[in-house]
Structure formats: C-alpha cells, structure tokens
Image (cartoon, rainbow, N blue to C red):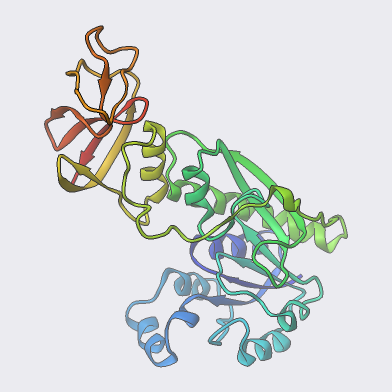
Length: 311
C-alpha cells in the first residue's frame, strides 16, 4: 500500500519502520517541525540543527511534506498529489477535519499508546502510571473529528513493571507499534479487519499533565508519591517540601519497613505503622524520619514511607 505517516518522535519512526518492514511504500511523512517553526526558521534549523525526525525521514529517502498544518490547503494538496491508500498518525495533537479524513481510500488511522477507551488525550504514558494501572497498551483506531474516539482496528496490551518510567512506557509502546503497524497494514489490505466501536461507558479523558502535578504531597500514599515521580520522567522532575525547603527530587523508592521514629504530638497525624515501636502512636505526614548522606531523606507518607534523594 501507499502510506503517508504523520507523527512525532519515536512513534513517527516506529510507524515508518513498521510500514516499510512489510514492503509497503511510505510516500510521504509530515513532522511536527513543520507546525512548530516558520519556513524561514526551519530552513536554517534543518541545516545546522536538524531534528531526529528530519534526520530519520531523510535517511529513509522519504518525501518531507511541506505544510503548516494537517488541515491546511498545502497539506490537502500534497495528499491529493501523493494519493496514499492510508495515513498513519502517531503522537499528534491536531484534530483532522472531515475533508482530510475522507481523502485516503482506507481512511486515517491513529496509533494511540493506551488501551482505549481508557486514557484518551495527551501523554497516556504519564497517566497510566500516575493512575496506578498495572497494564497499558497500544491501540490503532480509525480517526474521526474527535480525539481518540474512533473505531478500534487493533489493540495489544503489556504490563507496566514497577520500575518503569513514563519514558520507558513510551519506548515500549513505540516498539510494539512498529510490529503492529506491519500486521495492521497487511490485514487492512486483505480485508481482515473488522472495526469495533469503543465502549463509551469505560472512557476516560486526560489532559496534558497540569501545573502543580509535579509537586509531591506526602499526605498521599507512598506508592502514589513513587508513581508520580516516575510517571513524569523524562519530561520533568518532581518537587517537594522538606522541612520548609523546596527540593527537586532525583530519585525515590518505597520503603517496606521504616526505622524507629519519635512520637509526634499533633492533631495532623496518621496512624503509626505496624513496624513502629509500641510507644509510637502517630506520625505526621511529611516528617523526616531519617537524614542520610548524599542528600537522601526518609519521609513519612500516608501509609508508609519513601526514601527520597534530591539534587
């Protein structure tokens, strides 16, 4: 099939690689650089500081589609000229208008890195971990005029390991998407796909991680604190208040057992842990249980404690 890929980062590379692996012809690619920069700025950027997307497209000798948006007249003109059978989309924030959706023979297919209808919207890598999910996945679905609501064509799940970060999920999802893209294109070409409508009652929609979500609240559980920190990596770091000082967190881990600590006589308390001494009654959330070398602190949370290393 003749394929156009619209995307960003590792998902763009994954979809191109997956399509080419089965001998499909990638006739064009549209990269986020075209949306972010003016033609004048991008001309010099491509020469002196080319993006990974541009370098990848160039290395595969793929036509670099020139347009300011997927809904622009320039993009429509390019698509009509290239006449792709299908457009694959990955890591893209623009909605496609109906005029564009109806151009390719097999429509426009989005690769969304979650188990739709769960975690529609931006950065599902972050939200899957932050929400405490034990698994996530990759969904290929037909695009309509809304975000991530189209009929599902193919879906695969994988386990979220306890040590995985948001970036780890992104990398694994991209690898799975590459393998799925090859199978998907073959199955579409051979009429083996039956689109399945999403269950709206199970749908959740997430916005991009909002301002303040990077600040740790020790009144949350230790697992919640840990998940928040790892979910944001590599896009950002979390911060916390340690004895009145705002600190940037480098690393965090949950403690199964915590050291003996004094009894804090305060109304803002949490029940003492089972492993505390008999004399201990309550421990205030945010209490520094122990200061260690290398900017490391043991800090009480809602139901346990965390070991936090700061920059």
